[in-house]
Image 1 (cartoon, rainbow, N blue to C red):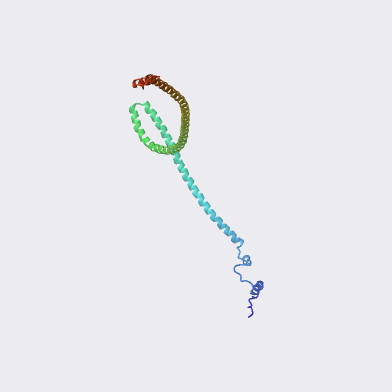
Image 2: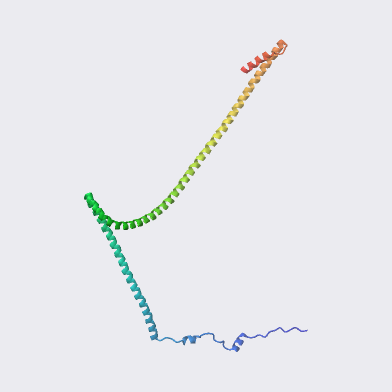
Length: 245
């Protein structure tokens, strides 16, 4: 059996594209763009004029609004100025009336005070309003100052705590040093006392040994002389003598 022929015929892609012909156009071409309908110069001028008219209308509306706002501002300013002038005049009148009342008799002062009370009631309302505003400002300023003072006090307290701790540490170090010195001195004193006590104990040990030897020699002499053992009375006397020595 022979092998199968698996070969494929080669097709030139360029030749295939040419055989298909030109591709169909999908959209406007450059020629279509160049041949588009264009407006004339007159139509362009008309469009520009329309735009200018629209902008003019807006400008006129804005100017009218600005004029109205200006008028309202002027009225408000006049009211404020008149109010401030009236309050200053009223205060001056109050001062003059007080001076006159102090000069006049109490009867005349009572009549003038009744007249001034009616006028002062109007000023009190304005004074109250101004007082409230001032209180608010003072409250805000005092709050800020209190916050700053709190921060300062916290920093001062921290510094004081640090100083206290440093002092306590120093005192503790001093106490520890004094204790160490005392211990060293005590150890040195114990060493000296132990050496002295050892010498004294040796001396005391030597003394009784000598006394014992003397006592034994005396007993021997007595026993030899009497050929008898010493009595209890003699022994007691000898012990007393040894103790006294």
